[in-house]
Image 1 (cartoon, one colour):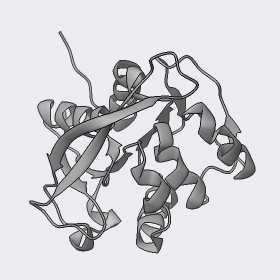
Image 2 (cartoon, one colour; image 1 turned 30 degrees about the vertical axis):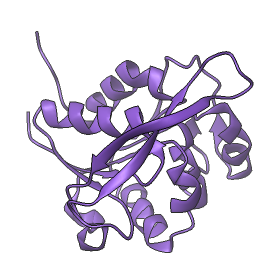
Image 3 (cartoon, one colour; image 1 turned 90 degrees about the vertical axis):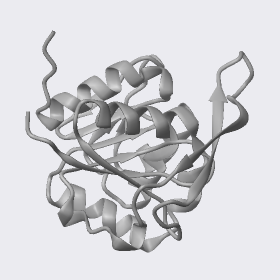
Image 4 (cartoon, one colour; image 1 turned 120 degrees about the vertical axis):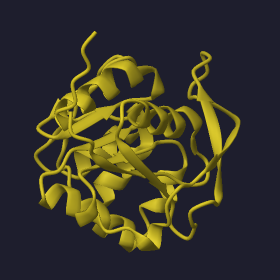
Length: 193
């Protein structure tokens, strides 16, 4: 297996599991993962939030862990990475307002590189105008944005992922096993037992 260099985009109040789990799992199998947030540097911490599904009309939110970034957003260039992962949570609602974030995301689509996005992370994709003609899923509240941006929203169980070419999406962290497995397949990473 060839090691891939993967960029993970996150930010303050990103979902805790949707930041930490892909970061650690991709490192565990040998990929080089750089976690970044605009206006923060390597060694800075972001605050995360834990979103849970407890039978209310929407998810609940609790304080998560502090997550230490290992790269500086201003130092990264899309050309240096093989793939992109976008965490969900509340961070995407403000990260999508950053033109440098949108330009970076567009690079991965223009170069047909693997992209994995989960939950509200899809808001960054819709703002970057890269979902037109694609099938994808997201947290259900993001479905109108997907449709308005020209994508086809696919309603799936919270434990499932959707793959369209090199784009891998999931509605929320309960889909991690399927979402990350599908992303590894798109990356060309195989694990044998």
